Image (cartoon, rainbow, N blue to C red; front, side, top):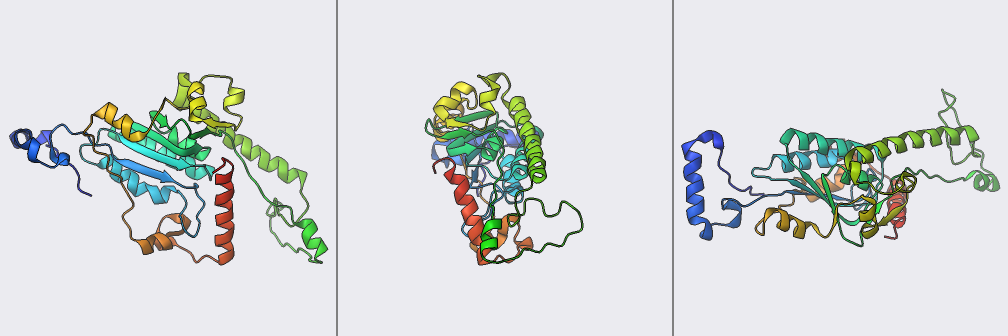
Length: 306
């Protein structure tokens, strides 16, 4: 990627001369070299967070860390934009990505703008909250500030098949929520307590980032419900309706440059990457694992009619 040229104030006269030359030759120079042209690197956050499928690695901090570093370090950047299209996924990965964005924004003193495409819900909305402003299409799905977990009960199925489940553990809670055993009320209480704790963290995060912009009863806002962006605007979950390109041109000028910062790796590395985001730590996956991951990802998208 070619970065726009920018004079270094610390170079003194040389920088001034370069600026003068660029102003003089502006009409014939490529736009990225012209003086006064704003640069807003764009980072795409697309897919289910933390869930890897055969055709698309999951969104993880490991997969985004270098991309974010490059975006925030780009010469001449006036802001960093996040193009978000995610129905959520793993809570921890969502929070890790949120924190990394905020850390970089504060270190580089750069504003962050999020633009929601089809959906920015659950963990996708958590990441959007790392932005100082959230833009969304009127038909985008936004919200779902809650926590969900799901499993299957297969105990009756294996009983009908004459299969006996045998488990050997060290630690009384190692077989919690085993789908081949009848549901245990203690297990349900334990997982519910964990969900409440994560939900409280999510609520505090939204409160701290959205502040006085939030409108409406918290019982509704934090119920896990989701809305179109047109309705979410009234709840203070987004700041304006529209698209990223139009907003950036309005804010930074018609000539604003919006280079998309992509991972620096080839096709083979992406396929080998796995959920870790690092080809060096990839592990072989079975067909069954791939099928389960694909079904999990499909189920998460389907919650929002997508």
